[in-house]
Every structure is written in structure tokens, then in C-alpha cells.
Length: 133
Image 1 (tube, helix red, strand yellow):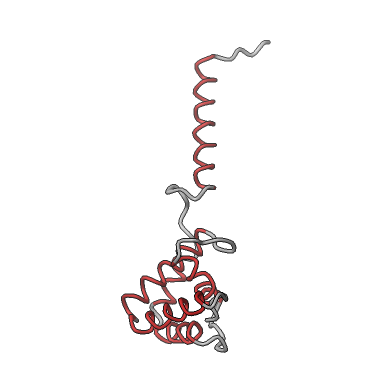
Image 2 (cartoon, rainbow, N blue to C red):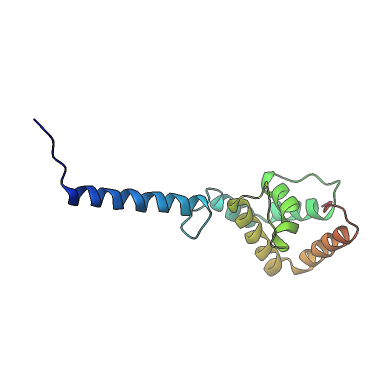
């Protein structure tokens, strides 16, 4: 028994495969079709905790101060890149989104502290050394 392919069904399957490949490529390249970051709810919960926010602010203002967790460390190291719109490794789209959300939160809820942190980043940049926290 010989199996016969219908040309019409093969074309439909090829179109479906092509669309799937294009979608995967778009997701991989970080386009607007990308999946939500798993850390979004974690970031939201941390930003609603005033004690955590204060500890994170202290970590960003003082290089000797230990950061409360990996998220605060990411903000401390990646924020200057995000502010300059030059986010490079280890800056993933999810980390960039976390940092942007944190920057926006700081601007709206802690504008004075945010101003001090940005000025410190600018000073460190003018002295040609990486941001020290």
C-alpha cells in the first residue's frame, strides 16, 4: 500500500511549521512576543516590603553594605547600564525589566534617595570606574 500525500495538506503543515519557527525566533530575539519573566511576582512582592526596599537602598548607596538578595545586586550592577540604555551581559531581558521596574518605583516612591544614587553613578562614571554601589 502506497501512502499518498495531498499537496494541499503538506502546504498547510509547512505554513504551520514556518509560523512556529518565526515565533520561536522572535521570542529568542527578545521581541514583543517574549514570554513574561518568572521573577515579576517576586519583584512586586519585594518592592511592596518597606524593610527590603530600605536595605536595598542602603546597599546601593554604600559599597560596603551587603545587598539583601540577588535582585538588589542586579539592580546595583545593571542600573547604570539600563539608565544609559546599554544593557549588556549579564543583563538579560528579564533582569533589564526588573531593573526598569525598580528604577520607576524608586523615582516615584523614593525620589530623594534615587537622586543621590544617580548622582553617585554619574560621579563614578566621570571618574572612569564602575559604579561602586
